Length: 381
Image 1 (cartoon, rainbow, N blue to C red):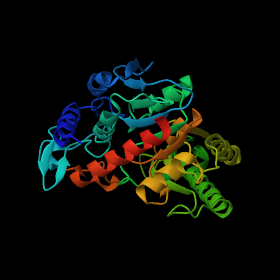
Image 2 (cartoon, rainbow, N blue to C red):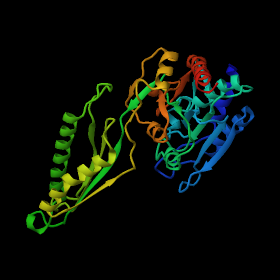
Image 3 (tube, rainbow, N blue to C red):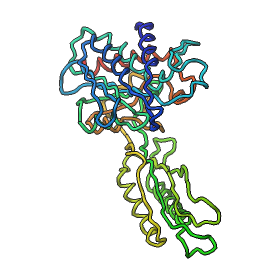
Image 4 (cartoon, one colour):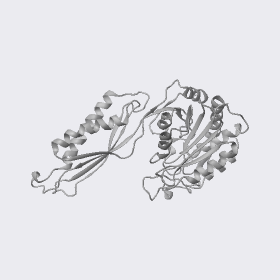
């Protein structure tokens, strides 16, 4: 591979800020990143379509296709990064820095570094006629809304048989992860003087009953569901933050709890939400308080690819590693919904993501290129 060409491409991607964030003051467009990728892919024979995402100004997906056929292999990655604190970095986060056998920069590992790896692998097939298509997906806002992957899943295209999502796994294949829902429960009571409880309806006391019921539900889920493929083998429910009341001598009129639930494969999100709401209705009726249950974001389904699927077996053979599970969520469930056998596998380490001085080890790059080349040869040539 041309190592300096890789470095030049990664430098350009890191130098194109594409932060996605739920806070508008930090959120940025990813158009520059998808434009760079399209400009590099077109000379390699790809038909590139930069697709604006409805309802998300400044956000784009790139769908690039080379070849034709009913099957095909997708290499997918997100184009956005999380926000950063430049004052905590030892170098400019948006300038790729080479030092001690590493490339430092925001997104170098998570996950802009995957795209130059794929581009380097594709050079081998510049003049090769493909039996099945190679498809590159570059999505928007994986770190916040996942609007890019959600849009692709909703439109049901592109179609392919296999997919590799290049999240940083040290090129170890991943075939499952938990899902995630983040929920809000708001209890609306009635304020009054604390000397006479009959003057109001205490939202904090009602929230105590809500919390107790959620913890009972957590125990029931953990007794019912278990998957030993995960380090934490049971579903988890975490009480994340709570806010309520305004003074010790005033009956609390409002209290809000935020929590997350991380289900195992086989636990549908909507069923979980429905079950939780049913459990809270009797508490509302007994207390006289309104209880408003809502989702903080649409959620990510749990994901599991079969151990005997062709893409899993190919990745295991090429890397020498058995496919396992990770704790973080990815875009894999959305690609699965589109009919693709999907694995998660890319260079870099997840423990470098989302922190100052993010880097990718240079020693991981050439082996990753080789694995991508072999996958293209197997499934497309």
